[in-house]
Amino acid sequence: MLTRARVLLVFALIVVSLGLAAASLMIGTETVSVHQAWADWRAGMTRYESPSLSILINQRLPRTLAALIAGAGLALVGCGFQALLRNPLATPYTLGVATAGSLGAYIAFVFELGGAFRVLGFSAVEASALLFAWADMTVIYLLASRRARLSPFVLLLAGVTLSMLASSGIMLMRYFASPDRLVMMERWLMGGVDIVGYEAVVALAIGVTPCLLILLAQGGKLDQLGFGHELAAGRGVNVPRLQAVTFLVGSLTTALIVSKVGPIGFVGLIVPHAVRTVTGSRHRVLMPVSLVAGGGFLCFCDIVARKALPGETPIGIVTALLGGPFFLYLLTRRHFTDWQA
Amino acid sequence: MTRCLEADSATFAYEDGLDVFTNVCASVHSGHVTGIVGPNGSGKSTLLRVLCGLLKPQAGHVMLDRKRLSSFSSLERARALAFLPQAVVPIFSLSVFEVVCLGRYPHLGPLRGLRPHDRHVAERCLHDTETVSLRQRDFMTLSGGERQRVLLASILAQEPDVLLLDEPTSALDIHHQVEIFALLRRLARNGYGIAVVTHDLDHAAHFCDTLVLLAPGKGVIASGLPETVLTESLLTTAYAAPIRVAEHPVTGAPLIWAETPEEGNEC
Ligand SMILES: Nc1ncnc2c1ncn2[C@@H]1O[C@H](COP(=O)(O)OP(=O)(O)OP(=O)(O)O)[C@@H](O)[C@H]1O
Ligand SMILES: [Mg+2]
Image (cartoon, rainbow over the protein chains, first blue to last red):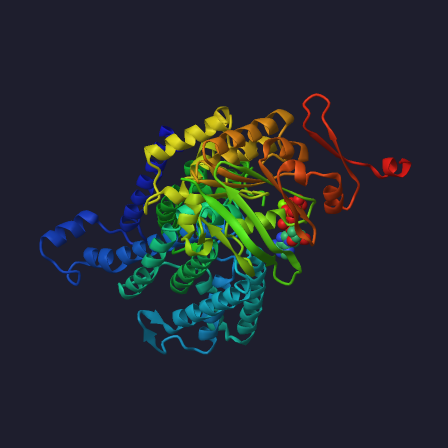
């Protein structure tokens, strides 16, 4: 159970995360006066007349929302996959969704499908990434679901194998790609939440929100699964269904996020572990707090990406540079007495 | 509520395997402790999984109060039957109290929050298994026997009518073994039906009302009162090794041991 100090910490974590989201609206490469924007808005100006309003509404807000959704989604899927695979190293990308998605994007780049079409808010590159991620997810599911229960080992081995296959596919695409395409591809791989306008964010939100709600609803069952499938099944948990839902919904969420913002690493690994040190391991608390903290963390990384160096650092580099050392620090602080399986 | 859980000529085989048992009849009644004994690999754990509905028999049925177990929803079933598996390997560190509270799962509402009543039940189960002093400890740091007692507490917190326990005392010291068996007896007196797998035949003889003896590849070879099941000839068949039965000089209870090969040669 949470002690009072822990409850305060959780509360602080949530406030800080929301604060970071708010800060990411104010801070950016261009300085925007929020007062100015507010005054313009009060004066009845539209975003076409006021440059401050325009930046705030057309650039900052969608960007912050994208970071929030991506961070929240990756952190939550990380919690789910760590429980599903019974492995502390599991991330949303462990099962190859991100690598397969990247291969999809690379193929679209090589065949110059860039502006070929747009469906439901997804460009050709994004749609191709999504399709390949789905293909990865389907193959793994078919392989692992031949028995009544999904075996964590089969999932892991199939995921790692498909991931390697997709990596070699990526190599092949790079081999074929012209130099200017190569630059675009590399940039895609580093991730970015620099989304302008609302079409993409709305598409992301519509796809991801129901997935997150479904995953959150599995919290109590994932606690039971932590003590083994037999004990969980004896308590009335439908283990095969829980595993299938966690895997499919988690992979779908990851695929959507990766197709929009690229394979941003580390969030799905470190946020669940960091939050666990504060909330303990009960998923009914861990999952919602990870959701908020993941969003806050990615907003923070995006602020650093925009401000730390002149120009803009790709966010995937920042998450790793900030997250890696912090995670190492956590490892020295906390003994992983759990995770013996 | 008096309950009766029975396997009605059940046959079970794992995928790609021989039958573990064929046409087995076994039952667990409210107020009774049924011991399931037999050598390694004889199918004790399998029988327990079939009885609790985790494995479906290929032929025959498992009946709870004369209704097919498969006609109950999984939560209904979990409120009637609780199953303690032989090996529980957790991955998360939770406090002992949280672990016991996990047992309340089948009773929780749709939002799955713990109510004061649930905590109260958990406290009582900690008390019954003498684990109150471990309450705040991290489950991962407990000794093997402490873990077993806490897991038993979490099974009791499920407030079932029938307990299916797979070797609940395998890691316990002699004092706590007897304590747990005495607790099972008390629970049976209060109306629980209990099936317990154990390798300790002396305790099985002393604490169980009926015994079921399994042999590898043969299924149930005897069932009934302990003194009719624990005979030298039946045990020697089941274990495929010379087993001796004598009377305890002090308590008068059966005393059972396996002869070492050397001893056997000397005779
Ligand atoms: N999941 C499984 N898949 C295939 N075969 C299995 C499985 N589990 C058990 N078996 C086999 O079924 C038989 C009975 O196993 P079971 O676990 O029921 O034995 P047991 O009586 O509980 O033994 P022990 O005393 O060692 O716990 C054994 O031959 C075992 O190898
Ligand atoms: Mg066994």
